[in-house]
Amino acid sequence: MPFQTRITELLKIEHPIIMGGMTGVGTPELAAAVSNAGGLGMIAIHNAGSPQEGRKWIQQLRHLTNGKPFGVNLTILPSMGPPPPYMEYAQVIIDENVPIVETAGSSPQKFVSLFKKAGIITIHKCVTIRHALSAERYGVDIISLDGFECAGHPGEDDVGNFVLQAKGSKVLTKPYLCSGGVGDGNQLAAALALGADGVNCGTRFCATQECSWPDSYKQRMIEAQETDTVLMLRRLKNTSRVFQNKVAEEVQQMESSKGQDFQFSDVAHLVNGKRGRQAEEDGDADGGIWTAGQVIGLIHSIPTCQEVINDMVKEAEETIQIRLASMVVVPRSRL
Image (cartoon, rainbow, N blue to C red; front, side, top):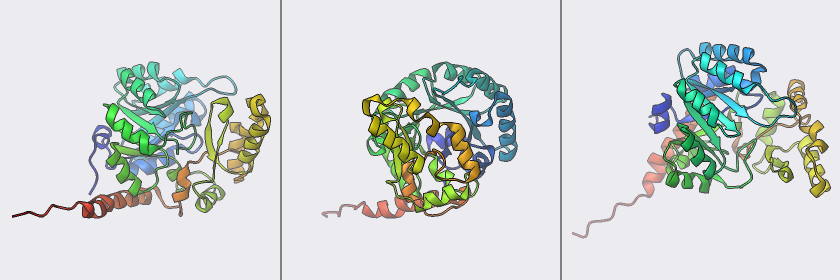
């Protein structure tokens, strides 16, 4: 029996499970697999390389989903070179009548205004409550509340989801997603209990048959524990959680040895995106940086996206209807 939440109703999806935008692996094929499985898949439009190619990706995704909802991620972050043409990407999203947009990174205010005028549902990723409250003021429809467990950029406040999601239920008025470290049905049930209206998964969908990552990356995730990630660039207040491989360890050692003198230029050659993409092409899991959340400790197989979603929903239902229900004791009548 599918769950019905504010998220499923607003996004018109069967299950309250979303694949957020991801650099590198956020392709039309993976996003379509999630949407076709009853969730919401998203491409990260900057992965396409240009606004023109981004338009083609959107058209491809629309074709692959055959009328089912899908989304596009626009991530606004500092870059090592000239910044991407964010406004051009935004215009492509509007021109192509994309139904749902997820923004991440810097303040989304001007982009949210553009998208709202075009009738697009907006989601914004936030790693703190104060950022989530600001996003609500900007008019965002859905908050993706990202806990410290997440892959990529967890922020600098280090608040885990057990507190973050519960706080969200007390102060946020818009529906929100529990994001970061989510990979099974017990966690879906827990997220709903804490006040979220759904979950956002990234790393879990990277360990699927439809993901473009090489088998070597997926096998490393299966073998990993929840402790096998690294928080790098902390001294620069640009923290990133990545998989603990040889390159990540080298970055960590450099950051530690340099101390207060550490600069991004010390490790730029190790963490740049071109090196990471080349490592993916070569299937070299130690050749470059790749992001992964602590949820890797819960990954033990490489299923299809359909199987991931089916299993999550089934386990969440059983957790709520059987395990938790059995713990509620009806007081005996004294009569």
